[in-house]
Length: 398
Image 1 (spheres, helix red, strand yellow):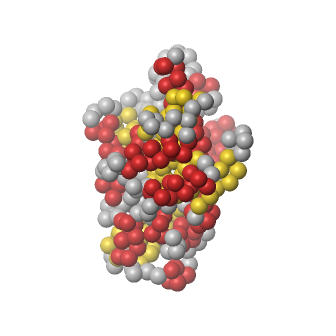
Image 2 (tube, rainbow, N blue to C red):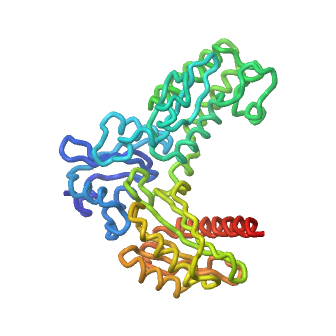
Image 3 (cartoon, rainbow, N blue to C red):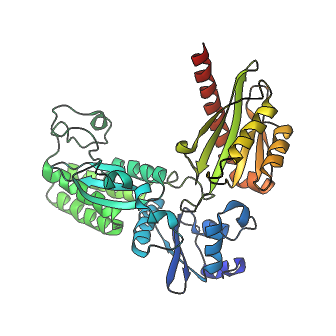
């Protein structure tokens, strides 16, 4: 077992990359990070049991070695992580074993191929056909889409517009489509772009840069200066990727089993049409398929009683995953009530001013310090969802 004092010997850099927890030669778990140093250290924090799932804790006990691969950007870390998970299929990257749940980058088999993000289940069911190649699976859909946005700014591609439609699509007008729609790019030139995109998702970014330098040299020698300048721009962009947004927070380990937050809020108008909601965030992303609405049955106009009813009804659903902690809207009364009902599940409460703006958070200081941003975000989402549900109910009654 690796101990926290052992971390120093690995000389982990404060740089993006991929880390591998190993047991001898066997790879147990693979993850990506904006900062390898901070991310790996987080596995040995004193609050690990509170903030991480049991599978991850078991993995830490099993591991006896850490390896890492530093990358030049987070974009490269995202792609390298997917390729390594596919290669090693680590025991504790449990989610990756269900390819249907995760996203792939697919390239269609067309004269002017499309580049799309598609879920594994859609591919399996044949909902998207004519696929030439696919890359993935990618564990975090938001990170993947952000990565694709960056790549598209460097190498504009077609996603949904009709090829040779005769007029420029919206993406062409803003520089994200090379002109497949209006015929301003040839099949040969567009095929070059697709090859470059494939090199990125195959993890061959260094090779791509070398290839681009040769291409730029050729255009310069043949006095095709406009094309040479475009290649120069692409090389510069690859070397200076602004990728801060690609991994939203090192607090969340995107591949962990069941790091889950739940937030609750109630809404009513002068004590009528009482409703409540539960919203869910998993691994830093809202999971809207798990949102729930509650029509309050016994607690008209009383926020405390309404919250009690919601939490008690929620706990009856033993088939729903247990959250790592719960966020409630309100003050000390709501906080104490939730703690009493939820018992072993940590609780924080977001207090509000007279304009219903967040003014403070009550609860475990370590959780608040580590997850303040996520607590405020999910609390705001719960309030939005509760208001929307209340308006819907009121309109139905009217």
